[in-house]
Length: 539
Image (cartoon, rainbow, N blue to C red; front, top):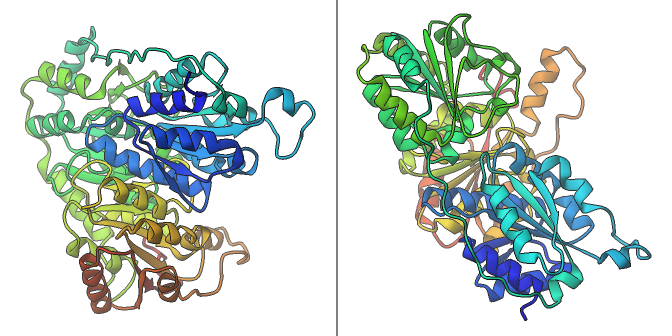
């Protein structure tokens, strides 16, 4: 009979999983061996947190290519499991399907053996969709259940604790029976009424979110917007659902007060609001109840919303793309959109987030966006640079700008980019990081070296926690805990086997980025030195 580890690996491979990320330990060696035997590559990272983000980056590219398989994170017991909590919480809030495999000692041993032993399931329960324990005779069923839960509705992480004896012991084989794919529900009752509301409206606005991305609703959304003339706002996670150089694309929203000062008045003029897979978990507090009184709000959701961030007068639950297509058919023809107002808002947003005259973070983003291929993939770490980048960086397809936008955790951009590059070796992949964020996970430069990945890393170096610094000053507090010393990142990159360069002007940046585009045998790091107050008044 096969081992429990072999059954786990067989089931995950059958789901389309091809790669796992993590740090080994004695308690997961059987799992890693089982994965290898099933053809699932194990990628060693320097930290479990980075492993989870690499799994997410890989998953994004797989999902865009039509492969519906969760990411895999492997962590050993005790400190390995504890290290993974941040990225698991991120997957939970950012709606990322992730199977988290942890090893643990057997229950009988735990009664008298305490070294590195604590309750993994209690640790992960608040930040997962489910936490399961693999049991003798039921390993296949546990893994099948874990995958179904991870992918169902709003995707998310599922933790599976695997005792050593279960992983190493013999396990009866079970015939694999993958459930039939879910089919979109038929058009619900009341669709004609909702269609009539949209047909009669003169100033409709659509807000699209991460659920539309995960449901693959981009084509239906684009057709709906184009045929009916509906302008589209997206959350940061949903950027690219409609190509952002489209006349109906109003860009990303979520964290910028400057953008809100332009977008919210525009929204106040709407006479019908359509929420397409919009999950407000990404939004600032002033997006609570932002819709004008009396204006109908139509929400299309993949699962029943339980938040209290905004009202919904009409609710459609099901596959986002199928619901949009059905609503599209129900609306038929509609009056022309308020094109002048849409064009004015696009102009005002572009002006508000224009690059600086000479040098600054905006110049960095603008220069690289102009030089990079239109389909380049990017990731952003958390911090001031991410807010500005999310407003300036245009994407032409979903998942074109990867970030932690619900949990907003630091240390994500580099591993997200590495995972995406593994899945799409031919792509140009750029990681935008702050200096503090890079220092938090700088060991993953070694992972980039070992994997031979040509990721381009752009470091915005201002030697401070810029976003916290801005908030601290705005509140009138004494400066504390926001400044740190300067690191020679170019030298660090070279020491890690990459190619590093420091830049401080537009010409130097353009030359460094052109060289990085041509370099495909190793990673490149461009450290852009910017002023300490470079983000003041920009967000």
